[in-house]
Image 1 (tube, rainbow, N blue to C red):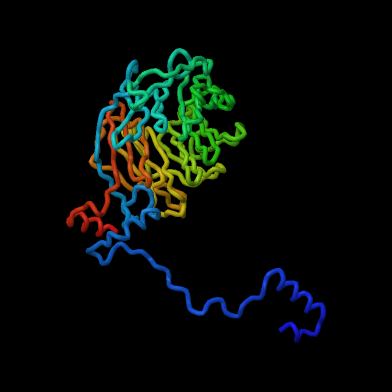
Image 2 (tube, rainbow, N blue to C red):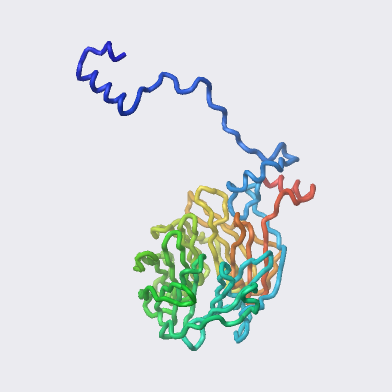
Length: 398
């Protein structure tokens, strides 16, 4: 009641508050808010309410079963042999893969696919450059493997690693002479944006790029892993993965680097040890000392998923091994450790895995390729497609 306020200064301040913020009502709502509607796929321990599964999809971690987010179960649904980009290669290893209209498309080891434009890059030739080829047949370019453009002398030595961005506008190339170059692919022309120098005499073995976080990650055979800023094209930091490694030993080559497009986390695989850093270079998780591998079954390639950090049971990384095994990993946030969550069985590949790719809107499809050129596709099982016996088994794990 403003009229009951005697102090003129207090009255004026109250009026000013009312004019700027309004009067706070004594009651906000006349009835309580409805309780939160928690979606539960299991009616009881023996049956599933399949109508709620589509609503649970956005909250389900990568490669986990919708309706049973604590369970990971993959099924091999397709296998094929790599045929694109194999001409002139000394080995039949798979270098890159994608899914096109439900079919597996793979290219050779010295190739990188551009699924959005149905092309692929080929590198490693004596011209110190790359060539652009038709990767997927279309009405305009129906002849697969046909050369579209050739770009010579992109480096002073042979190119050893390349990685295009997801939108195919950027291309990162790594060279034998330890330099990294950033290109923009526009109107069938390669425009040099910058030359990045930081690896001290080591051949570039792997590169990764994220336009979402504006980051470039490069790894070399001297064991160094560097992070660069895509926007300013400048050096940011070195990722120190060698905390528990004897510095007097010979440097170990970096096998794989990968970027999480949801969190910016960086995966680094050196020798048989996998480490994950955040976008600022801080350690997120590393393999436990209990996870040891021999020379015959050690991991030889790795990839990170786009799992957000709040999805506690999500698969954050996948490794392909020398013996053809494929393992899925999660993070124990309390101990900052990676732990093995699932092994894909039955094992389809009998030789070293050379390529891992993740597909699907919900990241529930995994593509694998090996040194023999064999490709396979694994998908997360769906509860609505299972029989009563299999469904009961899955419900027992939930």
